[in-house]
Amino acid sequence: MKNLKQLKIEALENEVPIIEDEALAFIQNLIKENNLRNILEIGSGVGYSALAFCEVDPGIKVLTLEKDSARFSKAKQNLLEFNDSQVELIHVDALTYRPERIFDLLFIDGAKTKNQEFFDLFAQNVSTGGYIVIDDIDLHGFVQDISLVRTKHLRDLVRCIQLFKENLINDPNYETSYYPIGDGILVAKKK
Image (cartoon, rainbow, N blue to C red; front, side, top):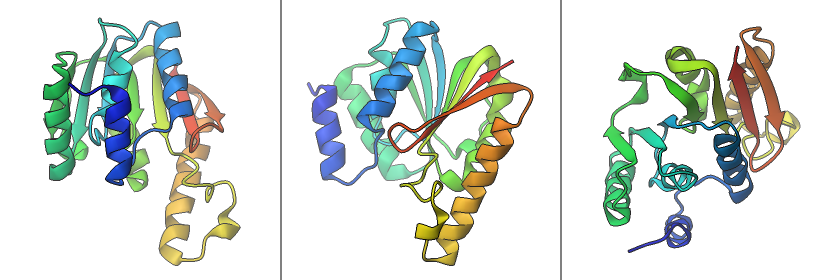
């Protein structure tokens, strides 16, 4: 049976992006300190972050959504190898999915151009006092320094992320903080 360290090595060897260690530790701490038990994750990848969240406490339940067929299959295989009943994995485009339950934490780690759409769609499923965490908000440093961008496509993506970040920070319904750890994390607490 694999452990998380082995899963991380395998993902990196196969060039599958996974959450950075510092960002993962931050979110695990957020989960622990706030007793967050019901998590919705947008973008399963290979299941690494969902499994890592579950390590915090055996009472945690994660619903994770993955659109990509190859990643879904790999995540499903990994969850079976870990024999993890805390994680429910669904193969679906998150933008077409409507959960009927409330979550303590929404973790957005899908397509960066869709951050606003994911937020708009799933924020209603976050409890009052719950958290929304968006990973990779710095996009490899480009969001902090757009002068590094050399293509129009990337510049448009960076502007999209910058606008999302600015809108969320200024949204009076959330207490939002930016943390320059990993590739940047945005944390919004629902008021």
